[in-house]
Length: 152
Length: 418
Image (tube, rainbow over all chains, first blue to last red; front, side, top):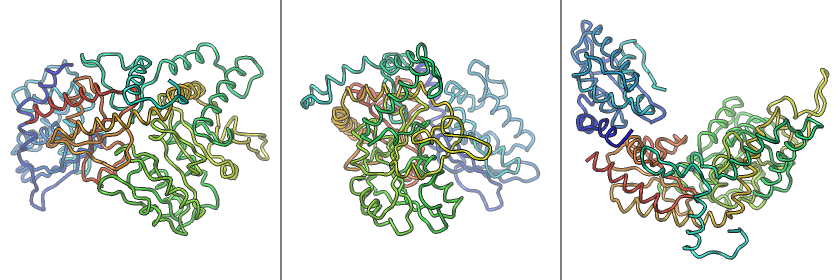
C-alpha cells in the first residue's frame, strides 16, 4: 500500500459524494426503513425506501459516518432509485460481493462504469470494507423486512 | 538511569528517555514505507527486549507447571511465577503477596469482583456508583450484576472539559451504595480522577472501592496502601508487558471472605465428593494452570519500569503531552475532547469535517498508528456528542519527532478533504 493507493480511495468522486451526499434526509411516514450500525466505527445510517408496484420509487438515508460509508450510501441511492425489487437485489448482491472480494479481483462489468467502482479501492483496507458495505446491508434489510442490520 | 537519582533537568530527562527507544525492537521498522510512529500505547504498549527475552528464556528453559511438581523445572517455574508476584507487590506497594491475584487482565479482575461480590449479597435498591467516563470493562460487569440482583447503577457526571469533580462523585454516595467502581485515569480522554479526595470519602462511609488502574500503572507511581482502595485492577500489556495477564489487588480481609469465582485445580485445599475446602489467598482465585509465561513477562516489565523510574516517566510524558496538545491546537481545525486540568498521556481529538476513521486510515499510510473510534467508552463519546475520536496516546518511548510526524500527516489529511 502507498499514498497513491490512498488517493485511489479518497478520490474526488468519493469525497464529492461524502461531503454533499445525494438523497440525504427523511421520507414520508409510510416508507420502510432499516438502521445500519457499524459498532467498530460508530457509523450509524438509517435507510428508508418508498416502494410501489414492486419498484423502489424513492430512497433516502440519514445518519453519520466516515467518508467511505457516506459516499457508499449516496452512490447506492443513485444506483437503486427507480429499479424494481429484483434488479435491486441483483445489484445489491453484486456490490457486496465486489466489496468483499480480493483487491486483485477485477471489478465486474456490471459495476465498472458506475460510481461504486471507485469504492473498490476500499478492499485494500480490511477495517474499512464494512464502512463501504453498511448502506447496502441496510437496504438489503429493508427489502428483507428487517429493521436492523450490522456490519459486525 | 535510576529511580533514586537526583531529578534530571528536562533536557537530560528527554535525552535519557530517547535512549530507551533502542530497547523496543518494534519501534524500529518501516510501516507502509515510512518509519513507524506508534501513538497507540493506551490501547497496548510495545515491549522492550528485556521482556521479550524473559518470556523466551522461560519458554525455552524453565517451563513446567507451577505449584505441582517436585521436580526441578517445576520449582524453577514456581520461583519465577511467585517472584513476579513479589515484584508486583512492591510495584504497587501492597502489604502482602496474598493480596496479588493474577488474572487475564483488568477486564477479568473487575469481573472477578463483580461475581464474588464482597459482603452481604446485593439486593434490589442497593446501588453501584460509577462515572460517565468508564471503559466498558468497568460498566458492563456492574450492569450485569445489577440485572441479576435488582441493584441500581448510578453514574456520576463528567464536566464539559472532561474533568470529574470529586464532589459530583461524593454527593452520589448514599446509604445504599455498596460499591464505587472508578477509573484512576480515563482511557478515552486522559483525565486523571481526583481519587485522593474520592476514595477516603467512600471508605469513611464503609463503601467498597474498586479502582480501574489500567491507564494509571503505565504512567505514574501507584501505592495501593496510600490510595486506600479495596481493589485495584490493571493489565500487563499497557505497561510494556505481554497480553493475557493482569492483576487484581484486593485487601486480604475482603478477599478472605469472598467466595471463589472460577473453580478447578490449584484453588482447592481438599476435594472429596462430600465437599471441597479452598486454598489460601491468593490461590483461591487462581483456578487452573495460570498464564505462567505472561506473569514472567509482567515481572520483567515491572523490573524495566522501575529501572526507568515511574516518576521520570510521569514527568517526561507530561512534557510530551503538553507539546502534543500545543501542536494539535495550533492547527486551528482540531478540537481536543477532554482538557481536564490533570491529564495523562492521551490527546483525543476531532478534526473539522473529517471523520476519525478516515483520518486514521490516511495517517496509517504515513506509518502513524493512532486509535480511532469510541475507545470502548461509548457513553463518554455520547456525552460529548461525537461518534468517536482520533486518539494519540503516548508512552515514554515517544518523542517530539513522533508528534511532528503526526502533525505533518494531518496536513495531508486536511489537503485531501478540502
